[in-house]
Every structure is written in structure tokens, then in C-alpha cells.
Amino acid sequence: MKTSELRTALQTGAMDARLSYLYGAESIRVQKERYLSALSAFEELYGKDRDADFYSVAGRSELSGNHTDHNHGCVVAASIDLDIIAVAAPSNSRVIRVKSEGYAEDVVDFDAYSAPNPAKYGKSVSLVAGMAAGFRQKGYAVCGFDAYTTSSVLKGSGISSSAAFEDMIGNILNYLANDGKVSNVEIAKLAQYAENEFFGKPCGLMDQMACAVGGIIAIDFEDPKRPIIEQIGFDMNAHGYHLCLVNTGGNHADLTDDYASVPAEMKSVAAHFGKKVLREVGEEQVIRAIPELRAAVGDRAVLRALHFFEENRRVAAQKAALKAEDIDAFFANVIASGRSSFCYLQNVYTTKNVREQGLSLALCLAERTLAGKRAAWRVHGGGFAGTVQAFVPDAAVESFQSAMDNAFGAGSCMVLRIRPVGAVKV
Image (cartoon, rainbow, N blue to C red):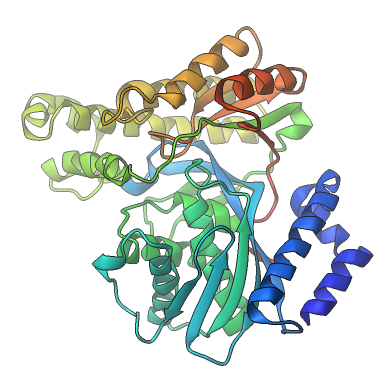
């Protein structure tokens, strides 16, 4: 479709039903303005009347399973209505050009940049190159394209801005070069490859999977090459609750070592038993070996391992609670997960800068604000900085939002909806 035709479709309401499905009927006007703005930016950069399409990839919220995926554990996660959108058009070159709002343009010759380059670790250009390389390694087609993106998935907020970006590159390559035949599950796996090998960050697979697949999903990563994915048809809003994320203003930029230490320490415990990941080790084995483990890998590694085993059990309990629509059991485990993350996983603040403890403060305020109410709160995502998560009854949303915005700034508390799909061509 020509860019002029895309503009007409937005302006005449031809895309209203699709936008309502993705964002809710109350957000159509705001989303139209957002898409029109992106379209204008694309045309200014890359030319008018190009054959182009709109693409969207959701951000994600981890509902259960904090730092379990990288040791082949289980999670429950959901896509949310904050997303990255793109206007993309094929080109006749062997170059991918991506201009993200607020950032310099990424330009990748995927023939020349086809292997990891440590000099480019941590740069977005490496994610683009990694996705193209991953597609080719799996036998999928790649092509040059021009794209403009804009994102409401805030960087450093714990809702997976990097995973959504990786999935977006795969989403575009899927439709432009592969007729949409690459599954979103496969796109997520390739996104993890790009982040691990080209970006230099040893992340798990949960973020990419939740952003790409969509809805509420339970994922078992016992075999990460063939994860077991189960859709859970639970509507939090219909039960009178909102999913709220509080952005405390911390940034993930200098925390790579903190994130890397979590899977590394868990795996050091597994290695003591000749295994690669904790999913291959029995909890009782670890408990019996605590004296040797303390000397070999340190107390924090043991605590993180014990968190993994307990958290994996909580995931099963929370999945069952959602399927049974037992909100009280689900909330009890949300709070237990948060306490375990604080005490044992120890990912609520970095010891590099103990003066900055926005997540600790937000959790304290959530507990005070929601005391006596049927609600729950916990650290969200990777931790160390970013966001906390709360499930807030409708009647308490205004007071909760006010308390959080007062502490962390206007707009810090995001009131969200879980969206039904992940990576799509709009």
C-alpha cells in the first residue's frame, strides 16, 4: 500500500477496528495521531508514495517467574498496550536503514556485518545485524528496507524496549522477505540470539517471547529450543483490576554486569553438580551441598539458586490460579515473588550505588498505599532499576497513581491493559 493510501486509511476510519483491537476503543484517536506522525516522519526521511506498511510489537510485563527463564525455568508473561510501531518499505539495496525517534539512524549492510563485532556490543546497530544474521542462519530470506520507528516502550523501564526492537526487525523481515511465514516463536528465538551474540548481553528468552507472541502466556523453558507455550484466557480488567507499572526513573544503561551476575551465579551452582542450568539440578541436592557451595561460589549464588526453585513452583501455582480465576491465590504469590526477589534474588537495587533505591521506595509506597486492599505488588522484570508492578482494584487506581506520581514524577504510574497479540503487521 502506498504511504498516501495508508494516510487515507487512517484518516477515514478504515483502520479503526484494527487500532481498537490493539489498543482499546478509548485510545483510537491518540493512536491515529501517533501513526500519522510516524508516517510523516518516514516520508520526510525516505520519500513519499513508497510501498509501505505499518508494524507493531508489544511491550511485555512479566506476571510470574522473576529471573527463571535463563536457567530453563517457567514464567507467566503478558503483552501490554505500550508498543513500538514502524513504517517500513522494501528497498533494492542490501542495506537495512532504521531511524528510531530520538536516536541516530542505524545503517546495516548485512552482507558486510554478518558476524558479532565486540566493538559494537551494546549498540542498536548490532541488534539489526544480529537479526539479519539469525534469519540467514536459519535459512530464511533477508532484504534491504527502510523503516521509521517510534516507541511507547520506555527504555530502561523493565518492559523490554530492546526485546520489542529486536522482534520488530524480525517482524519486518518476516513480512517483507518471507511472506509472513516465520512464526513469532521463531522470531523471538532469533531476537535472543541477536541480543546474546551481537549485542553482548546474556539475556533469557522470556522478554522476546512475550513481546512477540502476545496475550497472557505461560512458558516452560525446560527445552529452550522447543519451549512449551500455553495461552491463558484471563481478563484482568474484567475482574475489576488494572495492571499498573511504576517507572521509578532508574536507567538500565550501566547495569549489564548486575544483570549478567544473576544467570551466571545460578549457573555456577549448577556447574558444581556438573550441570549447565539449575533446571537440571534437584533442590535437595543444593541444600545438602550448601557448605561446599558457600566456599565455592558464595552465599549470594546459593540464595539466588534457592529463589529459582521456589519461584518455579510459584509460577505453576500462579498459572493454576489464573486458569481457575482465583485472584486471591494469584495475588498471594505475586507478593511472595516480590519478597523473594528482594531478599534472595537481590535484584531490587545495585550495590554499586546504594543511594539510588527507587524500586525499594516504590515497593514500600505500594505496600502502604494498598494496605488492607485486595491487591498485589512486586519488582518487575530484570530489576536493579526501572519499574515495579502492581495489580490495583479499580476504586484504588486514582489514589495509587497519585501517590506514585508524587514520588517519582507526573506520568510515572502507567495504567495499562493486556493486549491480545504481540508482533503483527497492522
